[in-house]
Image (cartoon, rainbow, N blue to C red):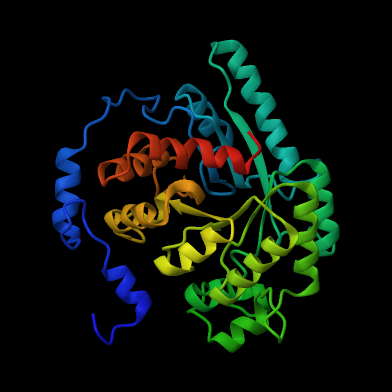
Length: 349
């Protein structure tokens, strides 16, 4: 690998368990022919017992929050953290925490009627949704109301707009979904967490401080590499122990294995998702599993990032990512750590 970029060389050096270089077709066929699990018995999903999904979607046009919570309960999951949920802009509740409380009450009624123990539910807040307040006031209000996680900018981040575009109405123009924006325009109309010196802007630094004080989880969301490593610096400086990089192999993030090792060493969790290995993104699950084995499971989690109708429901997505990681080489104990133990740590279980 002489002359190859060191990071690419590290990626290329990933090996199969028998020491051979990875070939996706060969590895995937061997995995699906060799993997065995309990027969599926719908409507409940097997092989997700105790799993906690820290990246679940249930906002407008996506899966129904109560229905997926009932399925998670019937399937024995440990809990769901709703990154987004329908009703977040309603005026009769403070925010997502209030909506999730309502779902939890309905789930408790269903549990009483069926005898199925209810799974745990948590709420998250995305910094883009301020409800007309300043970001710091909105953060304080949502933390006071009980959210368990805060996400940095996602849909409206400059990085997102530069990669996939967005509705032009977001920046005062007309038309349907735009093409990816040139970086300078994305920077002008999107949200970017760094100042001109490459440091977190004061408002985002204050959000991180509030997260540290509250002891909740924080996700770096769709940040650029510069943003992600600046956030990692804030995590170290503020003593935050519940920080996450979501879908690190997605095109939004696209971190190399050496970069993932660096973040894990800084105490940041690496949250791999079903979204990444789904047909929409097509990340090689063998590559994901090999990266996890190389990094170690101490700072890794698995989640769904599901909810959209093009995905399986969250519970099935959790079964799938756990099954893929086991089929491609993680042990039962390792799967348990990354889908039960580590997510539980992030949520204080």
